[in-house]
Length: 235
Image 1 (cartoon, rainbow, N blue to C red):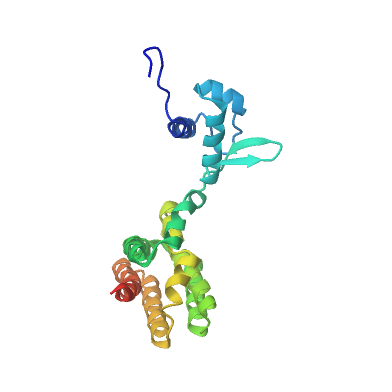
Image 2 (tube, one colour; image 1 turned 90 degrees about the horizontal axis):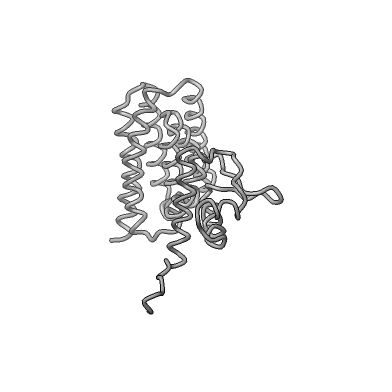
């Protein structure tokens, strides 16, 4: 390289800088949820970046659910809903090999037991009725898909009853339909389903009793049972 040449950052680095600057504008309130971004040219000039780097940054943030391109209208900041932003996190749970699934179940056990304990102290009568309804649906079906649907609804209701939107969204992404199906289809003999039903009944009883520690224990035992079964498949 000659003495007068100036090294320029790799394109990926410039794009990453553009992504970081747009995120900073959102974080500090310069760009708010639902707000339209300046034109690509104006934003690139404002940030001192090339239009191509800005275009790639916008595309990347759109994939992540931070920005939304509206045909004929421009690019907008999304409402930044926690569940939407965590969708790529949920993908990890859907495509990971079995060894990683065990680790993800460990994380789910820690978070879901805490959420269930919190729900036991906060759940209202309507939410408790919903939990009972989903439990009844699990008890009444032998169909795997119907069981998974009721199972998801059971745990989602409890997670939301904990009163923490972020915690509920993380748990939901850690236990998506695809994730549950991968585990449940390999663990669906009659004894396993009966055990799962009893574990859900214990969780429901703890919620009815408004007993956080019993709820924590029941939820942890439920996820641990699946975790240990999956670990045995690796062994």
